[in-house]
Image (tube, rainbow, N blue to C red; front, top):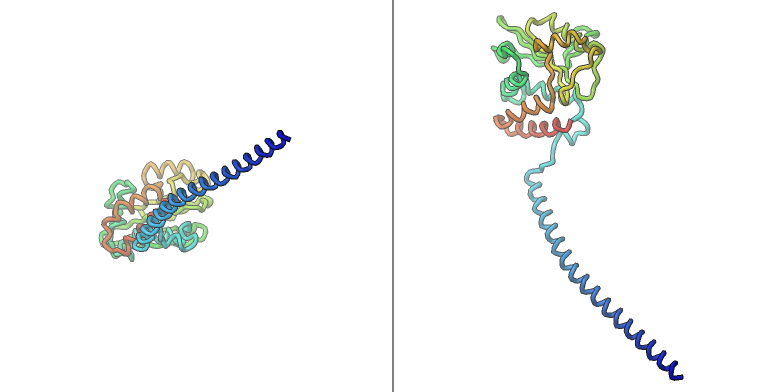
Amino acid sequence: MLIKTKLMETTSQLIAFFEKYKDYNLHVTKQKIISKKETYKQLIHGFESINSTIANYEKQVASTYNIFWLLKNIYKDETRTHSPFLADLLNINGEHKQKDLFYNQFLSLLNIEEKIKFTPTIPHLQIVEIEKWTGNDSLGRLDILISYFDKEKRFAIAIENKIYAEDQPKQLERYYNYLKSLYDNFLLVYLTPHGHKPAIPYSISNELYEELTKNKILILASYDKEISVLIESTIEQIKAQKVHQIVSQYLEIIKSL
């Protein structure tokens, strides 16, 4: 009987102990929650403050707003985006109204000898065309053709713009023969995102490629080098704010090609 009584007392004590422990543990847990809640509240307040500051800043500058990104996939379109945009930049009489700013820098970046050969004497006689028909379907169309003709000077700069398109059979040879038939003084620029070579001998024979590149008639150029540098080196000289903004946005997209 005594043992049974002792056992009941011990059981009661254990139950009381665990009840107190449960209450204590609950109290400690509540205190931790309150403590962490205060910490989290401060963090949330800090994030809200930062987000508010960022939102106010973005409201003023809209740093990610880019017309080329918004109009779906036009930043990839060499025919409807890149060729027309570059053609206008390189046009002394272009809508940018910055005269020969971009064109002169482009000539310098091509690193050609006797740059004066390709400098218009009378600016308004420069003609810049896109998708220039060669007059013969078998010869194809030139992406960009910059041409000039007066009594003393005649020249052409053709740009084959390759972003995602593949070379066509004997494409560069056909363009070379077309230019050669019309101009004594001309350049053929093969423009790609990273400056890779054309398909040899699919687009041009190895012998002709070596000859033209050696004589700097065929010039390899890239968006991530020549075109990026063209914009970076002229952007601070742009007088029109609207042009400055658009050209800045264009620089962003060509860095993603």
